[in-house]
Image (cartoon, rainbow, N blue to C red):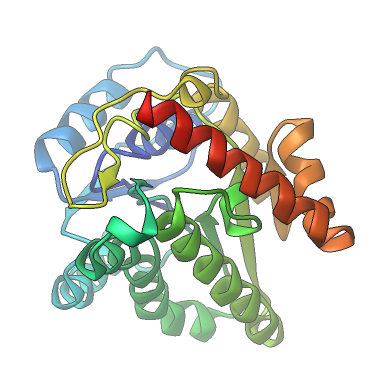
Length: 276
């Protein structure tokens, strides 16, 4: 059984929906989670109405809760486990993005982004771990970002949350090895979703702009298929990005001075474009 954590803020919603479609078509027994019950119902209706395939499909269950509410996660976990009795694969896919200058950003915004991108997935993972450990079987997947490995200007809250996510699940992978539980971190580059449109800004308002880089990003369908492949091959750390962002990761490690200079130049250009 696969548990798909449907993004509560809409930023990664398209990616979550495509993951659900890809896993459903592959024959997975799904539990779809999110805070928008209507969206979950519509997705379930769409999946069950899809044309028959050679693989046997199963009607998904739905569990509605807000990942940003720690108290709701405990109750939701019990409901999730009642669906099939266990979870084979947990896909943490909730997320919210951010655009803004550090000097203008309130700590409430930092906390909001961290609550959804980091504390929510961590809490849900911890709640499901005991049942996986008991069975000595399970696979935990988290959809992080290339910015979990490198940071770019005016994305501080988002990059910080993804860095924290990368670190936590790297530690989890090491600790879960003794229980034969797999941990996969997926780090995509830009994906063509509503990521930037729904991003939160320095004052907490909605950004509402489709960035060019996001508009030109990878298809959510392509990313979902890569996630399915990563689960099937039990990959530990997957980068889904074009050549330039991938090279930037190595540049940050091998030539940090040059990387920092390039990021400073990028910050100057972005400030200039916004002041025009």
